[in-house]
Length: 331
Image (cartoon, rainbow, N blue to C red; front, side, top):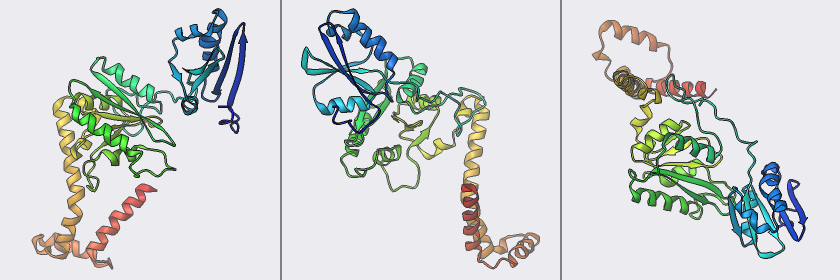
């Protein structure tokens, strides 16, 4: 283990001899809370006659048998403890540091007036806690998967056991597990949410969205209550809601916090504005190019005067307008 991490300055190896007990601790101090090591591991060894009694600690404990398991546990923020009395097995204790976790704050992209104002953060454990606080039921299932050989990634599939079809969960799980070995992700790449999206979509070539990315726990809970699963990645402050249709994108989290009449009105208004944005450029091109005779005379002359000084056909003019608006938005 020391030779595997010999080039890392944050790797620590410490040896403790307490009576007849000799312990060897290996960990990365940038991922470990040293106070947890002192309180939940060392003090228990000092107060007992043999180190086997530290298994009573409240820390998550696992048995480690191979070098690869030791390395992966250390990289996950665990402390590996070797005991001279039992050299065929090591203990892995979870002692992560919370200093690097971002505090829960209000979402920037999905702000609301009424309702909850918390959002997901980069910690998978905190994100699942935000969901469990809202759904206090034993039917809420969290299935953890680790994908990727060279750069492992922790992924959680969250669903309600009594509402979500089992076949859907099994299909999603199989597609995610195949992601690391299917060749869709380069060996030097880390699995990101976009890779999950591409693997679970039923129609990858469709221009319409089939998943929804959200930073809001309340929207995720509402999606779970509709009998659909959510997927979350470690170090990613958003949940992947699947399956999702295009009209779901016109639903704001605020719509469910107002009276139903106002919610329906704003929902219809967004759909109406969407179709205006899609159809108006094509209607403009069709009228100015081929069907200008359907316009009243006053509007016809006003329109002709406005486009007289434009040296481009209406089609190129409309495309240029759309591209310029996109450039302004990017800027």
